[in-house]
Image 1: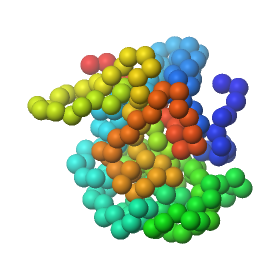
Image 2 (image 1 turned 120 degrees about the horizontal axis):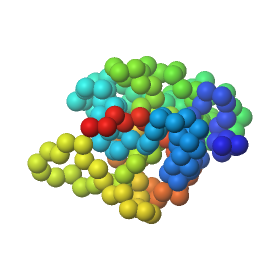
Image 3 (image 1 turned 45 degrees about the vertical axis):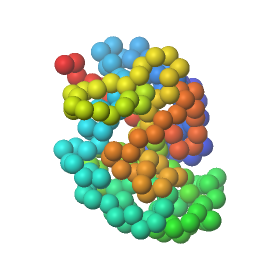
Length: 202
């Protein structure tokens, strides 16, 4: 794209400070360069399916016990979140985290981390929880009865879009397979990124 908009830059870190609209532009350009690639953002339902990897617990690794806002030891092996994101953080422009309450591992400054430093989920996907929030293709839909197969939320232009997974900045309760949030599609900040998907046609 000619530039890296990230606050926290290294070759193996997730790109952040990208809006949903930026992610769409990136995928359109890449798809144009590589015919048949057909990258998309996953829907919220597809994202959760991939994150859970067959599990039905709060984390793909099992249950979670939250001891404080940023203190859930079960997250430590699998996610960078507000409780541990300052551990081994090496860049000079980290966020001041010295005053964050209830941290699992108190630290003076925090930010994103290189990918693949934590344990992957059972399907081999890294950083599905923590590091950066990930944009989804659709907006927030209401849950209801009965269960729905492959549901899709609002897709109209300008609608808020779902983000999933939590981030290096967030509370422990945000880093769960089922937690949902949303942002306007032009939002961008240093804890918001995306993950491309190749979705098989049904």
